Structures are given as structure tokens and as C-alpha cells.
Image (cartoon, rainbow, N blue to C red; front, top):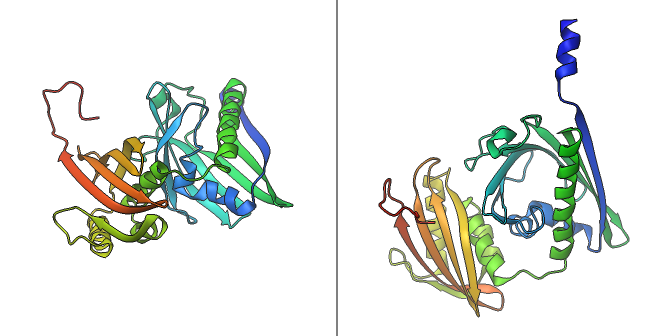
Length: 290
């Protein structure tokens, strides 16, 4: 009888299935799930943005995403990649998180306590004559309204995904992606994807070539393996992009405010300025640095 009572009190669980056909090749839809730059273009419901995205895309690797509401409230999620079959299937856990990537209950964000600490997401990709059928299964969701609201959120995200597949990468997106890749340890990939010939920078502590700055960035990552960068704002005008970001070398530390100014030619970064200011433990400014 006791066991029966405990079973009756457990929240009912649900599985959510969504299938969409995108007018894009499977390789591109796959990239939209595996490339931080592209994920930030569609992650989150309508009118939400995605200011931070970190991916260690391997079995056992971890992701940490942030979506920001129109009211400027951040919601973080994290998980572990359980299965990866290139161009065919991704299976990962799904949990609410804080900005350091620690798993937290849904009540941390004022949501229903019926959400479990861990859910499971399975995404499959099927080629259909040059188009792609993408199917999502989200399991262990609370049944009822919570499942329906989650489905609505996914569908709004997938509307943005469909739009992003046909939109070229902007200079602003490229600048943000460069910083996120470099800060997550993928420095050489960041340079290969976004830096153009004749690149120069204005950091006074290093020789002005791309090679010198790349080596310095790699050394910084080695010295600070838990480094995290969160983009606060990015502005673009003509060939210039300015990015305001908060960087922490260790979880929990105040970190620093950074401004990077990029100049682009033909979609590639060719010049970079950067300045930083430490975040003080205490400040008389009630508005803070961000």
C-alpha cells in the first residue's frame, strides 16, 4: 500500500514529438545543432535571444546554453551528449542550470517543481531529396500544460531555425562566434573560420600579427581552463562590430568587462581592438557594469 501511495504521488511524465521538414540540406541542419554560432541564431522561443552558447561536441561532452527573454531574464540549460551519429542522430540530457553550468531545479526559475532534474532530448536528421526532415523527441517532461508549453517553445525556436537556414552570417554574428570559440578553447578554429589575410590587432602586450595573438589566446585558455565569456551586447555599423562582454577566468569570481572592436572586410576579421576593466568586489554604482 505504501508503494502504491508513493507511485500515485509521482508527477505524470510525457513524451513530446515534433517533426519538421526544412528546405535545406541535411549537412546545414546538422550544423545548426552543432555549431555555437548557428545555434545562437535560433535558440529560444520567439523574441528570445541566445547570448551564450558553449559546446564540447563529443560523447560525454557538455553543453551550456543561455536564452534571454524580452524582459532581459536569462535561462540557462545544460546537458551531456549521450550519443552522436554524424548527420543522423544526437541524444543528450537536458537540465535547467545556473550560469556556471550547475544543474538546478526548475523552481530556480520560478517554474513547476514537477520538472525532473534531468530530461532527455533525441534529434534525428533524414535526407529527403535535398531537404531535411528533423524529428525531436523530448522525454520525461511533466504531463499536461508544461508539456504543451515546452512544445510551443520548441516550435517557435524551429520557426527561427527555418529562417536562419536561409540567412547569411552577419558580421555581428561572426564577431560574437569568434570570441565564444576562442574563449572556449577552440582558438585555432576561431581563427580559421573568421580571420582574414592581413589581420592586425592593437593589444599593446603582444606583437601585432594574427599568429602572436592566437598563441597568446591559446596560452590564456591553458592557464584558465574554466574560463567563461558571456556576451552582453553587440553593435554593428558599416564594417565595424563592437562587442561588450563579461569574462570570468574562474566560476564565481567577479571577472572583467571587455570591449572588442572588430573591422571586417569581405566577411572576415582584419583588425581588432580590445580593452578591459576589472569588475570590483564592491562599487558605489548601483547600476553595475552590465
